[in-house]
Length: 242
Image 1 (cartoon, rainbow, N blue to C red):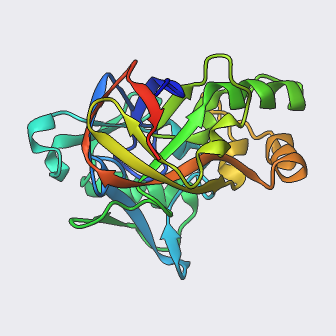
Image 2 (tube, one colour):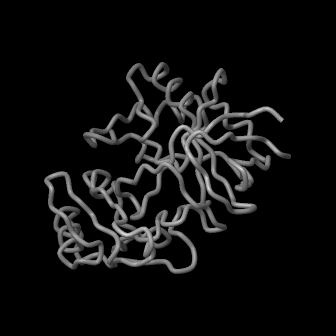
């Protein structure tokens, strides 16, 4: 079987809606990437079904860098730090961080830090993929450079000579990444206004979501379930197995 693509970069997002960690390798279990979206801040007044404090309420949140300091204790709040663009640094469970989020987002109550000990706090599926070619195609369609990091995928893949949105052809297939990880590609990734936010400046460009709605069913990238876990490294091949 020939390679469909290769892993161009790996990203883990320890806190929902905050800036992620770029990794050289990662372990993936049935719940997704180990350490991915295991913490979130819950707004007591948030809407039912999606109570989280995110970049929708506080754009600058996508610039807050969440990183594990001790990978051997990846599930503990004490191992996770959050650094703001101005250099302020907090433990993720520091009440001062929650208070800051409330103040800057305009929340009526201080958000609660939530740690999910069973499943990750993803919106739909535990693993997401997005191709560099899709970002390139969108850049041409919108007329400005579209940074692939807007799409907050776990695995960015390089399709080689493939076309943008080529990853859509994987829907319904089982795919092996590296030696052991097997994922089932469940569906395309429906997008929201988060993709309009520049990952460096937070400046919004609504034309990106508008173009996705106009030409691509408001979708970009793919969502996946884990069939069997394994370790993935940058450069690993992505191969269709069924």
